[in-house]
Image 1 (cartoon, rainbow, N blue to C red):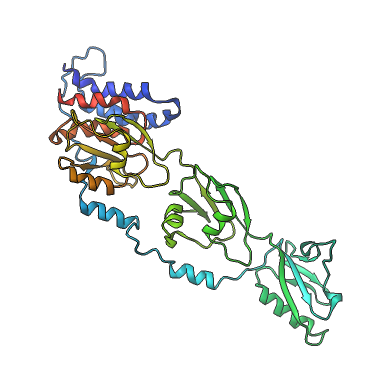
Image 2 (tube, one colour):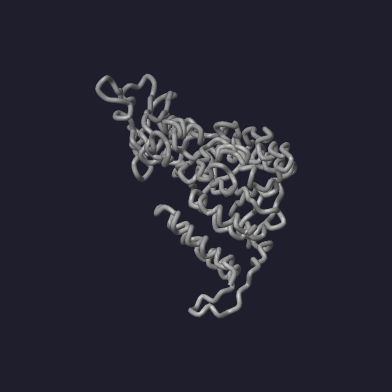
Length: 397
């Protein structure tokens, strides 16, 4: 039987031997795919005896991946989808209206500071010994406060202006033309929670001043050094809303901003899993962290020491990207032909994404089918496959 029939099994062994203990879960995730590839590419029997006929050709891969050449049109579409053309970054009308119409509604736990001018007996002075929060009227759990002459008054869910008008109306039965002012001495009823990679994870009170995502991040001390600015999550009423802090803070894309509400949880993840792998005929194959700044295909190849021109095939630079949708495709494969050096300008504009695998092959493009079939299991394993490039390049032999 030809030795090439067992290469998928050899690749499986390479995954296991080069994979760090921390990435074992990813290996187990792709093990069924590897076994399937092994069963397709190598027809030898799994049972003892190996007497069954073998199949030397690779299984058709066209139905498993989308193949897309990197062209000016593709790059333009990518830039438009990411808003890098500068269009459409203004504050949405919905957010602008929400900020203009914002009013705080009092809730249980809040402390009100109520002043009736010219009637000190109704205004409890804070003085130097007690703060306004200590001297004020705390809203009870049933949403009421007690006030002289009036008794219990339900204030929860009302704005400060509504409470002021209500107190003035009821006090007018005992005082001629009462002048009433109402403020909040302490906000305890409503909070948003900031977690993850920020300088000071904490709960922030919602006040009479509207709080947006940018306000919350600022009050939490800003994003930490290891924060992932691209995959922030706003959890609201069981719904997860993706937010790009990079687009919001670095590119001024106000479409990413939100007016925060009571109970919102804003989580900033770390950037530990934001990495790519560069494999094949480059001088320094291996892992590369993406960080928060955009990294292009040309940048990644340059960081890997550049292409090995003595062995690389100029039409065979692949970017393997796993699909995140519910389609039956395992990956999308982008191919850059740099037989013309000017094509590197396209690579400069093509941005990579986390978990991408960049591969520079020795195989002519006509034989990409077997290259991709061996690369497919790698799309979720950055850093574990740099040493396996020799196995893939052997397909020319």
